[in-house]
Image (cartoon, rainbow, N blue to C red; front, top):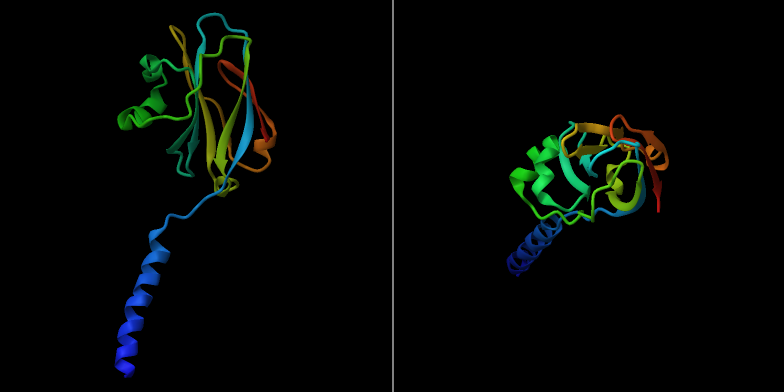
Length: 164
């Protein structure tokens, strides 16, 4: 009698263990307003890519793309090496490029479990027939930085982040 109960309990136990480990952990994300203020440069509009970098400095996710003509994405060299090989659908693409002196406000989503864990946010910019800036703006993803203004080094004058 005890043997029959054990034989019934073992499959149920194995099923529970399998169910516990087979589901992907859910990570809650939060929206952040992101304002990009461009410098007063002349020329075509800039393509801007916002990426999440892991603690080792490698690309993990594309958070946002400003510029919808994929013919020019290869000009954003570092990001293209990551994204272009995969050619995955990018659902973070918005409309037109952003020109000199203009500003753009967008909403990006960042997983809460990435904050204060060594991750970084990188803003790459490229303008046709001009320079490419791999890390026009790059900052550590901390609770403090997502509420601050960070100066750019290239086409971006500054980026201001704030929780939505």
